Length: 448
Ligand code: S3P
Image (cartoon, rainbow, N blue to C red):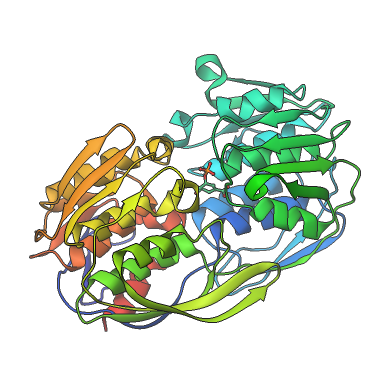
């Protein structure tokens, strides 16, 4: 990353502490990188299929790279992952993953660890150990291990099985009817992966409908999967379907687009068009909240690409009303709470986020971290156990702020600092590379 006028790199080789200049407007078009959830699933489902899968637009960021390197360690050939390059995966079939010679490192990626827990539990006679970075080793894994144990899986971990390193002894699993304790696509997908080669059918029942990329993609690969129940909360899978390699096109990640959607709405004078964003209805909670805020935006060029709805969004600055978010909508915007908290600071009046306990077990405790960091900039925020109250309309000031290693916090703080009075210094800004390696370049491009 070279020097450019609006961001100053302090560390020369790694973008750690940067100065974020306040002021200016954001204008132009931007195409965010591929959807992280779909990228992980493309790699995993491609790996266990028969034949070759090709993926256009796979997210070339740290998290999917962790998934790819775990799969490579189990004998899957995956071509180099780089921007604008299509990726080829040579599938090894449902039981074809080899026992790795070493521990599998999932880095910072909860999706990698949790989906692998499901998949590897069903590989008979093989042994695996999954670990990750400091953050991932503190995230709860029992929510995945417990339902898998109902299918006969054998998993062990620290603190009564809740924390990685997790060791897995692969077994022949049996189908089950499983009600998941939380609306989590990671938990649901782990069970679906385990059930592909189990004996008998499995039904997963979620308390609320979480993102459904696994269901869509597994069906496209040839799995016997039926979605039913109220709002698609019951998913039944029958083993025996043969997964066949596919051609996948990954849409832009709405969770990355979220930073520009909010930046365009709150930075005076801005107008941004974000192109080719995935608009899967299980992910578009932020659009509902932008309607509540009275934000000025329109969705253009809506179409379907490879089984997922896609469109462009043009957004421009306007005055904004406060909003309310409760647990009904949380699964549809779970990753957007930090940037929506920033948005709330610029809405005239009191915004309320409730039912968001899940935020406490993400890459960081995001309720605590975003309120702590925005408070350093003068934001008026109260933290509750399950949410935040934000009294917006007060001027923020530049400050020494810190991502605390969380990618979505780094990018949210960067947007907040654009309209603070005075410059900010953001520590551990390199965290953004977990999901959006080009974030700083795209920010600079839109500022010109
Ligand atoms: C993800 C699901 C979400 C989300 C995460 C990615 C996935 O987690 O926060 O960034 O790819 O399945 P939960 O569904 O576990 O809340």
